[in-house]
Image (tube, rainbow, N blue to C red):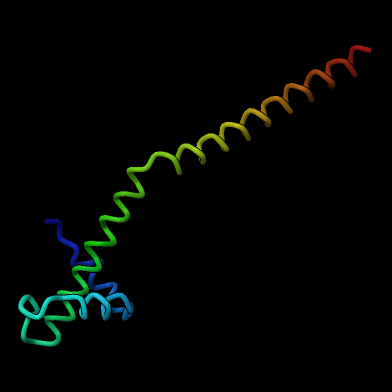
Length: 95
């Protein structure tokens, strides 16, 4: 299991409401006796869930593919515009 301490610390610092929901979902037999420890455990659960969701998003190539395609289209349009301007300029100078 990866260490999600930094992400959990950030969630606790910003008092993320998902921690409360995760705390209510923790089984009573797995919940630590200390309220602070239970809150921290719930924050770690949320942090791990966030990390898994982020990994799934990054593993999906569709979102990156669309962005790259848009960049290629813009680059091609700029290149064609420059070529057209150069052709027009050469025609204007030679005639």
